[in-house]
Image (cartoon, rainbow, N blue to C red):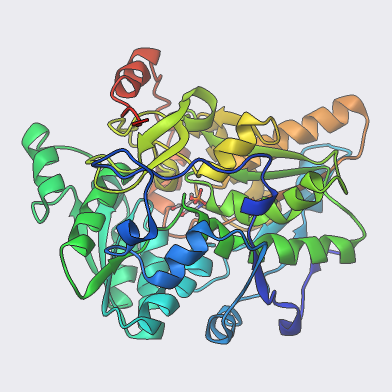
Amino acid sequence: MKKVLLPETDLPERWYNILPDLPEPPAPYLHPATMQPLGPADLAPIFPQAIIAQEVSQERWIQIPDQVRDIYKIWRPTPLYRAERLEKALDTSARIYFKYEGGSPAGSHKPNTAVAQAYYNAQEGVKRLTTETGAGQWGSALALAGTFFGLEVTVYMVRVSYEQKPYRRALMETWGATVYASPTDRTNSGRAILARDADSPGSLGIAISEAVEDAATRDDSKYALGSVVNHVLLHQTVIGQEARKQMELAGDYPDVVIGCVGGGSNFAGLAYPFMADRLSGERPETRFIAAEPAACPTLTRGVYGYDFGDTAGVGPVVRMHTLGHNFVPDPIHAGGLRYHGDAPSLCLLVQHGLVEARAYAQNQCFAEALRFARTEGFLPAPEPSHALRAVTEEAAAAREAGDNRVILFGLCGHGHFDMSAYDAYLAGGLEDLDLPQSRIDQAIQELPTPVG
Ligand SMILES: Cc1ncc(COP(=O)(O)O)c(C=O)c1O
């Protein structure tokens, strides 16, 4: 068996919401101005009602609208592969499987939530969506979703990625979106950053501030977020639900589930349906590994506390692992992993020891991406190459222990728009910048203090 394909009839009908199953209730979001718990009305300027309801829902299962499922069917269910050629190359006794999300029109898992968010916004009469994008994957996904529902899309793209990936911008424009290199002089948040540093490479935190400010100051616009918040993770759980069924058909169950983490959405999408089995006591032994970049080591070196989700402090304040909202990560090629915080539910699971986090430098990840391309054929995006590094460690551990553990990882996107990164790596390696603790300490000192 090389791959397990599911028929369209097996496309999940519901999303899985982990909130009621978490070991403790998640901490409330706070208002950035008052630092008091935030109510649904506070989110109304930036999100449609249906999304706000999902964000705080305690329902374990949420029905996927038919119009969303119809669009999912363009590329879903996605295939699950057995990576036997990689197993051989790694000389491991482990069995390795991967779930491939790179076959969506935009090339990653991101359309799973983009389509849902565009649908709910269109239902409520919204005409225009604003967003940020790091690697360009999320911006592409929202641009795509905008075309399906007749929405105008404006994307603030982190400047370093805008320069590294001109074809991602062109792809967004092909789908009709307008793209700006962030920081821009179009918003107060952008102008404030540029006044301090005219050459700012940008960051996801800055681009979020710009996109939120843009949406909040226009009546026809709302904001769409590509990761971190509950409703985004919820929409991604189609990945893990399909994978659970596919693993069953393959006659296996994962001992370890691995994903890369930028804000946590592809990791959660794959892992949470399996985490549900662990939390219910049905599969208490399953392990979960979150792989992040050493240049932006949120889960491994950040503090757990309340912080602004964006640099200017215009969006909600959330409890998470954070490197501080002023932290600007070095311009590594995995642009989608350069976020200072992480999804609150994932952070809570890390705090409870249910998810283990590991951080890797980019050269070791590209080495794994190359090995993967040369064995399994698919060219990974730089982001999931971090997951591949963890896979290699687990494969080596299996060999040493003489066990045949089952490893499942998320290949959440292809790297066809990342060839300049591969080019640089092949030409002699990339820079692995050392991240001094003092840089993190400084950014963390500026965390806000909750009231009460
Ligand atoms: C291919 C890919 N993987 C991973 C990520 C990280 O986001 P998340 O942690 O929400 O999956 C991104 C974000 O842009 C991405 O484009």
